[in-house]
Amino acid sequence: MKVLVTGAAGFVGAHLSRTLLERGDVVVGLDNLNDYYPIEHKRRRLRALEGRTGFTFVEGDLRDAAMLCDLFARERFDAVAHLAAMAAVRYSVQHPLIYGEVNVQGSMNLLDAARLNGNPTMVLASTGSVYGSSTPVPFSIDAAADKPLAPYPASKRAMELLAHCYHHLWKLPTTILRFFNVYGPAGRPDMMPWQWTYAILEGRELNLFGGGRLKRDWTYIDDIVAGFVAAIDRRLDWQILNLGCGNPVENLRFVEILEQLLGKPAIKKDTPTPPSEPLITYADISQTTAKLGWMPKIQVEQGLENFIRWMRDEKLI
Image (cartoon, rainbow, N blue to C red; front, side, top):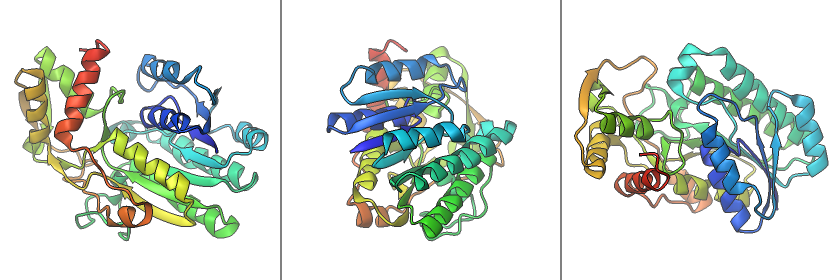
């Protein structure tokens, strides 16, 4: 199978690319190598992929519609794993316009290139943040998800709706996977596991929204990749599914685990919760299990242990 992985130098994209290559698939990795966070992390992930049999890297941007059409026409992909995006809820509050450019228009460019070139299987990464704060827990895929709290989840919900149009009009086989709080080795340095690890080690104050009582459905990277691979292989006609652990953890508990692993107490500061932050994320994964035969395997205690071990092995701490 020949698979296009967008965002191949990113956290999930690099892990997914490696998994597909290890099972014998051909992978074309697309990434624009932007500097939203230090590019050294993306280059480190790319170095682990380049030279592997079956891997080709293309530096390009989703906003370049002509480039995408040429790439699809040349490569004739069997499947597309769409992970490239502007992420991060809080950053989107400060920089909303680029989320429309990349996550909405860029994704539409990708969908259009696909429908013009053979209708490959489309698996698109979305976010559990689309559920906002008004959805009953656990978050069901049947919920309206019509009140996102920030430009990032709003842009992802717009992508989902556009994808449905392409499925409805041009029969593009599409699965949307809503990720919940992905973490693990080779993760993004702007996310909480990295930020809190360094704050603890450096003796800096650690801001805990709502006294640390917010809950997040932390989902380990290997579980996310397993769900993505299952969706590629199933080639569902149209489906939205949650990829989450289904076990929300209080931020205070998350910090306690880090304290134990690092052997150092955190300096905690109670901070008001921003309006962009829901009080809880909690995935109902029953439909994911039924449709893909997928279940998460790694709980947060083991996942954070793996993450800290990787940080030490890479001499990042």
